[in-house]
Image (cartoon, rainbow, N blue to C red; front, side, top):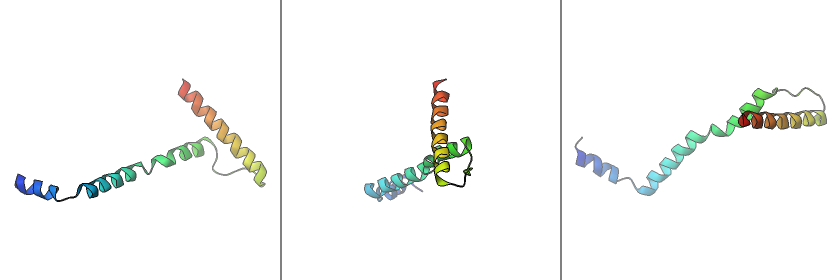
Length: 78
């Protein structure tokens, strides 16, 4: 394809549409980043809660979250 023909084809794309496509690609690439903290927490603790009662599971989960936060903080400190 000759250079003039290629540049005229690229010039036909509106800037607004090109920007929208780039934003869409950026968000598609970032979609897995939201799951990383959850994966770290699941790997730190267990996926199943150990108790039958909600209050005991709630306390266990909160302690696990605080422990995970302290673990990550100390890991970054070293």
